[in-house]
Image (cartoon, rainbow, N blue to C red; front, side):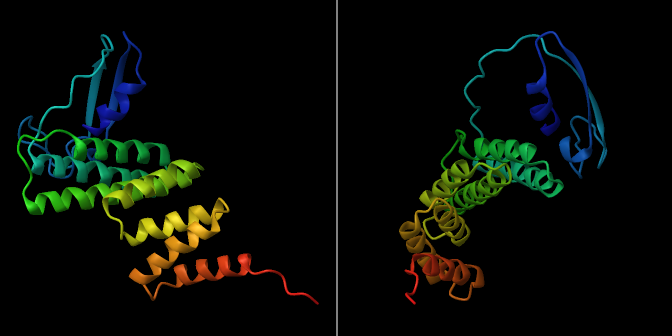
Length: 208
């Protein structure tokens, strides 16, 4: 549960905590049959942290379950992002990636494999946007590059990578990346603007 995933790491051994969780952080809009939780129900958890141990290896899960967990955690990250809680958003996106990348009980089918790939790319792009909000350009660039290793022609990741390279003064690399992004989306005004700005920056000043 998201409430416990976010709350328990803040505790110290021996501490007793109460977590009041709105439904997005508990069993969601539909609720649950086992345990019996009504739809959209807030829950109050009482947690005693007995000790801290190294975590066990991730439990193998079916691909469909990994996809569902990944999607739920990414959506919660989007919820935090929209509220401006970027640290919580980043935690959710990382939990989403952990769910998507964990061991599976059987090889995914072609459609599941494609969906896993798409969800990873979406989550990495969201991580990049969140890292930028937190003022961490290097981490944002690393997230873009991870997304492009999975999907080399992802327009969103190409554009953001080009912008970040330009901010670092790596203009030649930025131009190559942005030109590739423009090939994929020739009508993009944002990409045209970025390339025009780089061209002006690279042009020598005219003599008078």
